Length: 561
Image (cartoon, rainbow, N blue to C red):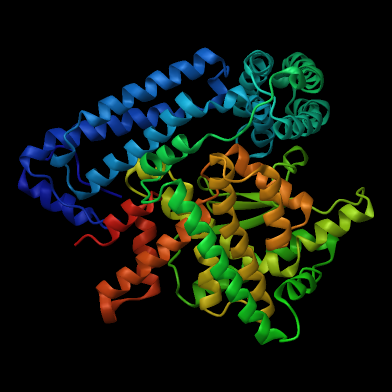
């Protein structure tokens, strides 16, 4: 896809370049803009090159994080030296987006400093399983695994030296992750080495050293970490407000967001009451939700059940022409690897990163599978959190037309900054928006599933409350758990995993409900602007082509003349 070049030397090239801008609206720069645009393009190329260097090359030392902070500050200074008032609309949005990304990094590195309290950050070895399982040449995998294995002892040793605070729940979760990580060194890597042949033989000694370092790290987690001063995962109100203002570009501060969260939470509760009356006037919505959650697939066919509704969601999006999907694509539901299963109660989604061996853009929805070795209580608890309702509602969120489709558009965005970067307040908001879209367009088979959809939205409402609440001191960890169990209807173990995720990623989980709310506002504004020419297909296509940025920037681009 051609785009406007930074420097155009004659009018004929200008015409050709403008004609080629079919993915995003773009305009030719006038002469006085060329220097600023060239500076921005050079900055984005350097910025993207920095991001291409992944954690595999990092030893996770204090000096590494210090260097990253200085690099971030330098990048911010460089970006702000570009005359933003001389940029065209699209370039200005890129400028603002880049600044928000860097501001978020600066805040994390300078004030939050999670590497001083969360041991899970040092267990980069978990990425090796992804290297083993992904498509690609064996020799490339061997090279990357060698690099990662050499770093494992260094990273874990740095963890034992640099963690300053004992956060009890972080310690518990880290110990679970580390213990389950044994399978990588005991089973997965030896199997890979055996299958890869002589070229991988040297990995065996590296595997032994890395495994020994993990055993030492486990001893540290059990014996030494609990002796350190007890700390908290909260980042504090000042940092939270800074995150909202400079990273999310939101109009909220912690206080107004707290009020917004509770207001919308209570609104969703009212909707649940009304839908419950339509289903059975004699039953409370919680009673109905309890019954609905006990309607689930054969536990041995959980993967197949998820795949069934993924495929149905895709057919609904395509047959109703809700979102154009012009690329060859597919979504597969697969079991999640064992040692990651306690990081969330359900699973995670991996968007397509490129064409697979069959020239198809393939995404994976990885769910925690049912396990026969569990005791009966654990089995029962699992099944009521993997009911038909949650499967039918969540499939659109993760796949069609949620993360899978949004990911494809982002992958094909011609603007490099927008292709390579995103933010939860839009991407997760887009996923939740698709749950609402499916309700509006008749995908859910009955009102019982509608009630379950509202209960799941209540959960995302609650995320706003306990994220801002826990990280600013308005809410304790235990009270956050109680909101999820007593008011949303989660089982305690699932509520703990849910709240744990928020404790380690401040700000991420407010993106779901806040993002959906902003997308619905943009839809209303765009509908008013377009009048009789409005269509859902057009709105969705235009919005997704813009990128994955803070909603204020998405709105600015969408509604620009």
